[in-house]
Image (cartoon, rainbow, N blue to C red; front, side, top):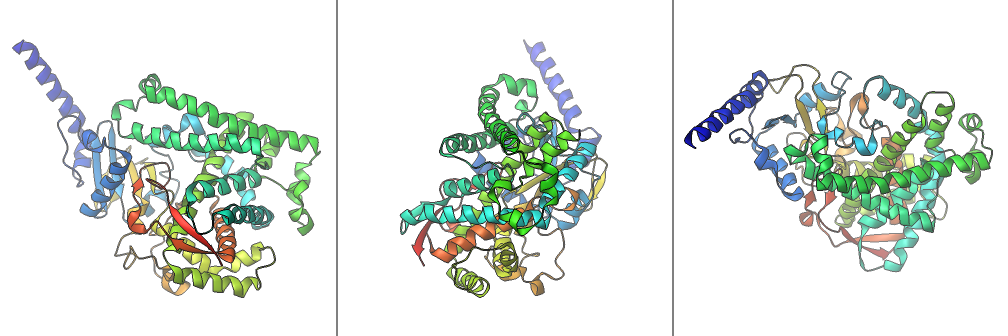
Length: 501
């Protein structure tokens, strides 16, 4: 018995040495970070609830300024908060490959724009880029206006009551992305499947975090056999069914109405832009590219799944926290309303894209909200070669996690960083700021392709709301408890009161 125990102990020591004292490990261990445990490193420390995991990241950022490491074989990760280091990681295509964490999303998004790399990513990005030219965004403005009007009508029966804005804003952004990107309006029947879709996205996020903190579930074959893997398979069946129907509906619409996709791309007249029957959708670009042999049916599915998620969930997250901040800062609301009156006059006419573009103070307010509550608060890359970060040698193959929320709350970059102060983003106050100190839409060649779309959509929603309502606080910033997820979410409702203006 003693012999067996001795052999086991020796084997464990050998494993510990192999895992924790190889060349890569020795370099990583020079970087400050949490104390690790025999063999498993920090695996036990990070195996916590989603709420505690988020708090743990903030404690790391507070204790180790600029950079820290996490070691839990096979996970060797470095967390960075310095804009200079972030510039090294994302300013070019050298470290373009996403980390292992993104591979967990492959059963859902496969090789869509978020996950793909190399020539495939470049080709897909090239196909999509025309969808975000100003003239195309101009066409979408009418959709934003219609959905913003419906948003106002949804809230009118709830005047004076605490309203959980989470589900209402998710409905708004899902409707907008379906109509602009997919060319499909959600009917009463499809709204039910849309609800199932939204619930599925929540479920996928929760499963991702559970897998993230359990290192033994990283291999796909183990995860697929687990209860979490079986649950994910069931959720993805519902999610993919919804997006497949969206694609079918658009194909049927194009055939039924005999729409010439080439004609749509060339037509930029104002009459066309306002014509419901001929509105272009981003999906049309893929269907057109399919005819030219640039993408296949599976590729279209990948990009639709990616855009449906990124186009509704991230924008909804941004709007949720923005409304909470506006409700808690009445003076900011008043300044936005003054700007709206100056640009729009009597509030009776529809808002145009040119008017939205002139709402510069509102844009400052949105930017400041995204600084405090960036929807995508974590960006991850795998190093393609050894680099120097904050004076430390970080070997190729290391996962580098960019902590966007901690970057945005650095006191040396943003004075009084916890204060909501839109004036930070006035032109005169933005001069000299490091270009990688503020990255709510990432930066560099893999930045968010839809950031202008998102800002316009947020402007449209908030302009419509503030034309009709005064926002009063219920949930306050001190009540917010962030939960680790795919996008930034509160652990509970975010409540706001709406009073007739």
